[in-house]
Amino acid sequence: MHPKVKAILIWALVIFAVYAIITSPDKAAGILEGIWDVIVGAFRSIGQFFNSLLD
Image: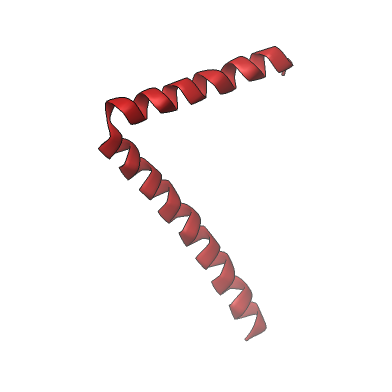
């Protein structure tokens, strides 16, 4: 991907995120909380997998 196109897409994503947070902070917080729960759950699952390998 061309570097300028990539930069434009990143800026568009950042601007959209700021807009979403300003217009609906409760909804944005809920989305971030959901993403965080998925990440934490994935790390827990990976940890349980390696623990089961060691048992």
